[in-house]
Length: 198
Image 1 (cartoon, rainbow, N blue to C red):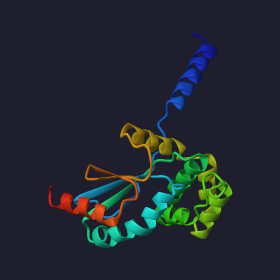
Image 2 (cartoon, rainbow, N blue to C red):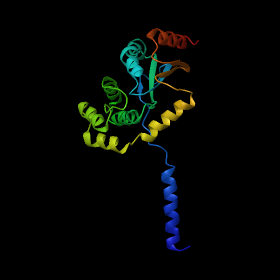
Image 3 (cartoon, helix red, strand yellow):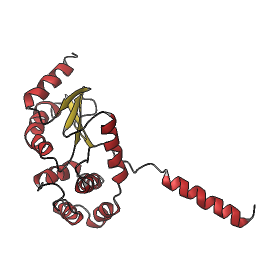
Image 4 (cartoon, helix red, strand yellow):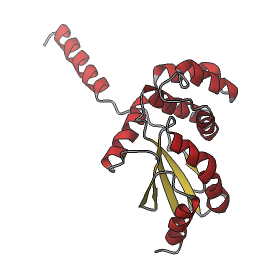
């Protein structure tokens, strides 16, 4: 095989490798100790009003009673199913995580919900949120523009689909599924049962 043939084969192989490359993965955002006996796995969408309600009202109670006391860790997973701005917001939050500001960015997104795909989470707005948090603008903006974690966001969505999740928010408390922004008492009962080994 001549040099031209070798080069052509190399180009084809490189193209196949690029097409099948795994998505860029960010570490799963977690609140709480890695040794906590109970894990709450959350699947949510930043445009989902019920997700915002849970984040603002239920999550702080769980954090005070269980996360801050070392009993529970909360793992975040994206289920960006409500449109392009959901996916862009999820990517941007992962970009913020690169600079250690995932949870602050997560909270800021929920504070600025304004309907589905209305421009509230346009890329310009997402970048402005990064500036508000003092993120390095050039690094963050490049991450947002390149959709660096788009594949990872889609992988989380696919995982949620495999679990049979069809709406947000959805949770698993040591494997026990809870759908929707249920009252604190529902989570309290599930957590206490898990802590008791039931």
